Length: 283
Ligand code: ADP
Ligand code: MG
Picture 1: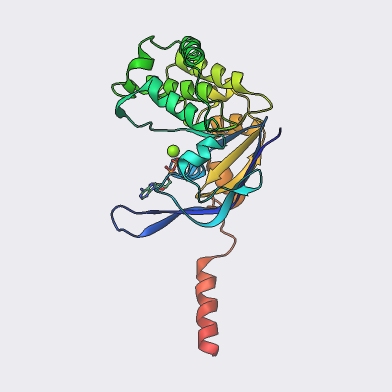
Picture 2: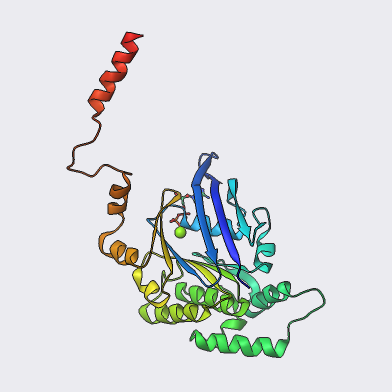
């Protein structure tokens, strides 16, 4: 069955640690993802990509001030992370947390168990087999399932581990936040290919990345450019190459976000100031 994740006019604020003021990060994001589709989100640092990812998953630090997140038409905006996870949403975080005292396999088993209808239990033997095969697919160390979650994991191991969780949990919607950062070329290939293998009628993804290389493995159907808390441009794969070669400044210029250097401004400040003054004077 086709499923739809719909983000409508999403406004999100965070509490600024230093000033205790709230700061609006997302300023009206619209995005619709259906199962079977892969959407890439690119954009400069600090534009709100991780905020969008965390908000879709329901992270506590993000406050939705306007708009909604709908899953098959049902508003999930006030649901907990667990509820959203049970409904099939998964987030691979940019900075995965350590959880001491909980092994990797226990963590995944608990998450899988939570998704089963009441009274049903995970078949342990099947789980172990699946876990072993996913560990092999991702070329991870055999001891990884038995270690505490992310404790002492290298950056690359953490990222691979997020994909391991995704493979076992089989979400309908996965949000992958800079899953390629900190990966060497070989690991990038392994991660990219494993994500690509998930593609199918029951899987939709939002892939946040800065680089073309990951998207060579997971070819997106749509590419969105995010700037200053909004999606300012949507296109196809041609956008990826353009950004790789030219960065983001051309988009700002095209959209009139900044006036390009060495061109005549359309309205000169001087005349504005004079007009205002005259108006005031004529009152
Ligand atoms: P991106 O992932 O696109 O690099 P983020 O979503 O991580 O951007 O951050 C967007 C903006 O929100 C940044 O300016 C960042 O400094 C700010 N921000 C994120 N979290 C907090 C927080 N807890 N307190 C204050 N500002 C925050
Ligand atoms: Mg980020």
